[in-house]
Image (cartoon, rainbow over all chains, first blue to last red; front, side, top):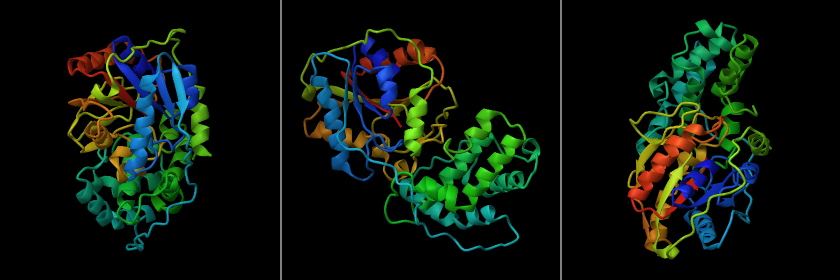
Length: 225
Length: 151
């Protein structure tokens, strides 16, 4: 983003950049940057808080009044990610003959559909449809149990598969809780509280042990997991 | 903890050497008369548009009146629940419209643009190809100011 800011200025456009990683902006300064120490993935800070978001933008646009630069200011508020898992009601076990994650994903389908109906759009679709999420979890469950990942029947690239599964869960969760989760809560919920998240992490460990390429197993889940 | 870990990691990754001089285009009119566009690096795209892949240096056009956007970034290392709850926490198109209505800025561009951030190469394609291409599109739309938002 800092590079884009420079390119645009070279072409006669004035830029203001919201900065999420101060260390990058210090090494590669944008002409005008406002560092916002907000959760990664929430550059405007707080969902469903229009006044806070407008305030962020007003502070950013105020940098246009500076006579020269580069300028890198800090937003005065720090918003930390919450590390406690989201408290989210889950469907009961329905078919004990299925891997737990598969059963769970099927049980969340109505919640996913409600979110889709409300938002009108889904970010699932890299390699899976919502219909395919349980099948993809069956593959991950097999790998977690020791199946060779190259022969397990992934429906698409494993990294993109995991993206679609996590998106399915996060979009379903949006219809199971009353308010937007704090940043980090949804992630903690997925990896720690759901069978899908646990299965994904277990499959990732097995794939690493089986010699899967580093960029594949690493990016199947957040790097800090 | 984990966001700070990722920030530390990102700050230590290889970056291109762009020299000491930081380009600077001053405003030539009051802010309240400026036309503003968003350029996001969250890899947003319209449903049906081609998605982004790792190290993808291309861009997508986001018509300013569209809100049916997909979050296409390939990195698993950032929160997505905020985006599910409120598009503006990633892509402040409604907020920008409001700031145009109250006179903070002059107007909103007809089109915004999306790239995929968190690139791990020399960024040559963005510096020499797709970045200048979007700059020309922005100029053709009479844009004065670009608001860059990360993810």
